[in-house]
Picture 1 (cartoon, rainbow, N blue to C red):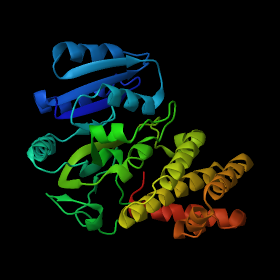
Picture 2 (cartoon, rainbow, N blue to C red):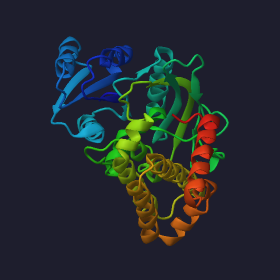
Picture 3 (tube, rainbow, N blue to C red):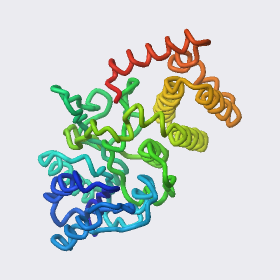
Picture 4 (cartoon, helix red, strand yellow):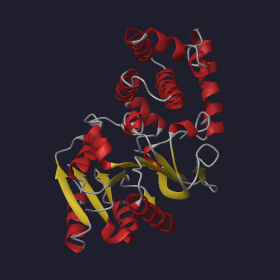
Length: 338
């Protein structure tokens, strides 16, 4: 059995996927690299097959009809044989030294008496044109280099939350929680980083800058104009996160607080994108999203509506919406949102 399975969702990724794969090959035989060709129409499938041919014991090419990013992650999970599971997007890459430290740590943990459900590391925003690279690190929030539980997680401020880029789950845990991401939907990385958390008992944080998260392509899903065009997918993910939060049941108090803050941020992003769309239809969708949350759980609606972000995103009238946008831009600059 492999130590780590790494899924690379690829859709028309011929221009950058090789950099991603090459950065993962130094993991050697301990790693399984699953290149998921999600119905591409360029040379993606051919490149995936070439790497499988050259590294048959390390790389596996998986071909499927186009199902979107979430279905590509699902395919990776279905094919994974490693003890741990990681997703690396095809336009991103990893740092070699940090990678070696990650593998060494996972190997050590597997030999130990305790099962670790989630390994966390840092990621770097590789923003095109930015001279200074912002690092998302957790050294002031999480204990380092040892196993810990949610009770030992300190307050994580707004803007410092766990993303897919920083997470390596135990593969069986993802199967146990029956994680299945929706098809033909962007922004499902938020579900990946959110839904399994109630199943996570033991965590481990390694303070290394492992994942390099590239930002700068015009067609990238986190591009603001693209997000507005795909707002229905953002709303779907938001609603699914609401459902997941409400299904948590009796979980650790600090974990519940963390999950609420994450949901608050996602709801804020949905709201501001709908405001920035600047159409009556978008404003109706914003109202419908809040009504959906109220219908599911009035207490949760009240908390989200009266949080600081919730109040700022729901200022009345055209002037209030302008203030909401100004506040969002300020927050974006302060926290370094995309």
